[in-house]
Amino acid sequence: MWCYKGLLAAALIAAASHTSAQELFVQTEPASNMPAHSVGLRLSNWMMDEQATTRTNYHFIPELMWGVNKNLMVHAEGFFSNRSTGMVAEGVGLYAKYRFYSRDAVYRHFRMAVFGRVSTNNADIHQQEIQTNGHNTGYQLGWVGTQLLHKTALSVTAFYHKATNNFNNNELPAYVSGDAVNYSLSAGKLMLPRTYKNYKQVNLNIMAELLGQTITTGGLHYLDIAPSIQFIFHSQTRLDIGYKYQLYSNMQRTAPNGFVLRLEHLLFNAVH
Image: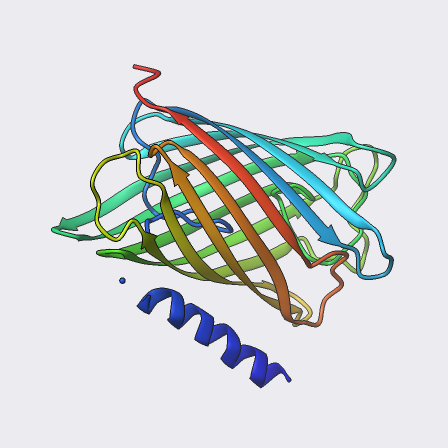
């Protein structure tokens, strides 16, 4: 079964890369940044199926985004969840990405960036998976490289997670390691418009992403696949619809499978 799922995941990645995306992904960030001097609002809605119950975990992550310049962008994040008693605020985070390399040519470019996130969280720690974007207090440091080839984008990401005790006396259990390495492979393709005429045309992107994590002690791993569809309106409003499915895991994960619905809007030249 694992071999079959792995081949299916590879096939979806290959299909996305051969169909001739904009350099925008749903589950990961590319090496490119949002436009300089722009600000944006991103609203991410995660609806994940709990494995042990029939309940749906809902996580809401609003983000304020700022393109400081062409190489640096910063996000301020809030974490909300219904997992405890109703919808409550669980923490905040700060994300920054710095693009340090760019090789541009006609209809193609290759870019590399480093990024980091620091987060706080007051929820109970209920799984071995480390996730500082909404679950764990801690930080992450990583690298991403993205190749754009006309209408196709390929991106590779790797980063280190460090989780610490959550607030409200929610400590890391003895069976949860606080150290993990995450890695991803993303492929996307711009499907529409076939011929660009003006910025008012709706852009349609399809993509598939492989997402993995390895806990540095204990030999624990997971691998997910995440196909998505993306619409861009007037070159500044973005709608993402995606699904994340666990291909393999030998670690405890409360709700690995589910949908993401994201809305994002940018204001260009808003800050100088």
